[in-house]
Length: 335
Image 1 (spheres, rainbow, N blue to C red):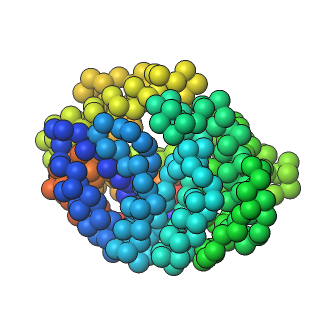
Image 2: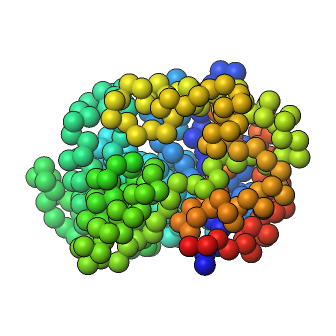
């Protein structure tokens, strides 16, 4: 049996109709500190670039702010779009942030799929798989303290080194079979978009004679918002949900091979309420549903500022989460 995990997530989207950006960042850091004190397992920060609504482009910078405001929670960055970045610089950032957080960092690497981002960084989408593999190899070797020559001929030597072993920091994300096999190949954990990839990952680990690393299935209950009045809160949250879905769908529709769950998602109010990707419920409903809805490797995720939501609405959810978190932590989930 395993205990139910909880995470609070921030993407920092700030559409024009929502909360001003500066206010949103201040609220996110306050909320991270509150969630940490309440006992939430992780604070998750995402990455995208050149988004009109200001989607968080620098999770390592934001992660430093979270590290300074928290003491216990994991700080999870992801998916970090590794093909867009110099892996040596990413290795340095990982080491410094893991030291700042005293070994609480987790970094999920993804291949990326948004064409505009790759164009902005001068990288071809066709090269993303190769660059992801090369980047992971360079980062692993660098964080193990090696002095070596990178595939492009550069000398690599990274100091300082992180608190944790690199294999305890790095996770491979993705929505295709190749991501599961990549995670097994490098001896890393996996955070897949589809739960069936966990089985492929475990089978590949067995084939390679490796012990599986951490496995993070898609959240059993995702984007949860707690309230005493679900109908009234749906009305407050709905414009922000629709914004998020619309923006993700634009990216997904522009990339035929995207595995985004937002592709083709219905955007009328009742369909959104039923689709399960967003959940507005009372604390009592959460406690009742969680043991059944959350699998062994799943979790419950909260986005208190989703789509530029007003902080006071997000605070309502976090305060209620704090009140029921002890009950959730005592409720095991079946494997």
